Amino acid sequence: MNYKKIKIEDNVTIALGTDCLCIQGPLGKVSLAHDSLLCYNTDNIYIYVTYKRIHFKNFNKFQTRIKSFMKGVLVGFYSILEIKGIGYRFTVKNDALFLKVGYNHDIEYIIPGQVSIKQISSTKLFIQSINYELLKQVTSKIRKYKVPDVYKGKGILYENEIIKLKEIRK
Image (cartoon, rainbow, N blue to C red):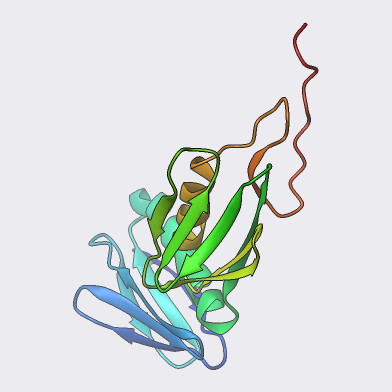
């Protein structure tokens, strides 16, 4: 049996439950499900993760997830989406996002609980969350409604994303 230690950041508290590891900070609380092959112990400075040598890959995955969750409850993560195209726009109402992207109907996307979406303008969205994995899932799902066109450049893009346009076929 080997172990590794992960430093607990300031202003972060960690609670070990029977089936989850709860990480709480100034921005919120996140829980991480236990892997049955890993054992967790904690003091106020470090989390000690015990693993068997054959399960080293699982440890590396959980180590990065724990560090990511600690950063999320301290600072948070954000992403900005832009929409390009004539008549394309975003609208945020209550807990739903409406997209007008060239179809004959508006697309309604229900916003998950740990994610907040703010509308900067009719063509820009500010998406924020304490869970990095959930944030990337939401942004990629929204982006899939209208993937950028490689000929005209229309569609939903990440901020500062550059689409290399192809020459129009003749």
